[in-house]
Length: 224
Image (cartoon, rainbow, N blue to C red; front, side, top):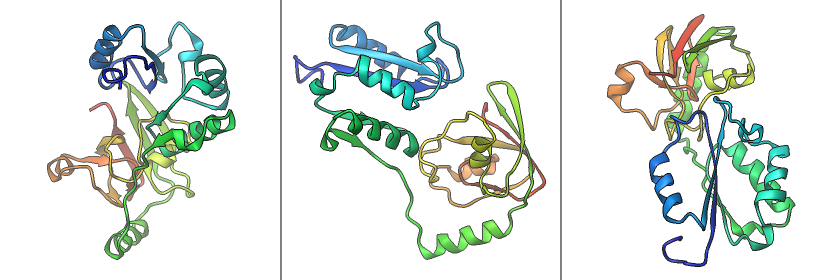
């Protein structure tokens, strides 16, 4: 759009865990240098502290309120494109609509997997094998996070998020592989898997958003 519309401006609010985890970082920097007067980039990080406190941590209602008041001119915004976890997309969408941006100017995609009868049967069988109260150790960014699975949650990802872990995820439907990790100890069964190749599964890689613990102790590594 920057190439085809010489009068347009573009602002990118990009949330990542660390500087190293920023996807397309070099390409974005090149575009920023090429269109320095019309393209602005704001990097938000959840695992590294920035000099500006506002750029630390996930988007929440308070942070979005500041963005819409200070950084985004709602009346001058033609389109807003959202990408990320469903909860975040809906949070941002609702805030934008609340401050006056028309719904038809907000664009996003939701990734999900349809369940046929065979997959429903498989999921039911997996849940029958679930072990309650599993001790889980998560290795992430060189640190260990320990928690006990709450019976209210089926998957490692949901249990970890509820326990306060900050882990990468997006679709939560077994499609995108953002939550991919390696099973180091214990056993799990995945509800569905539309992202990993069989070779990866054979090497003990799993999707944490689909992994149901079937042993009393689990260790998974997000750093590999």
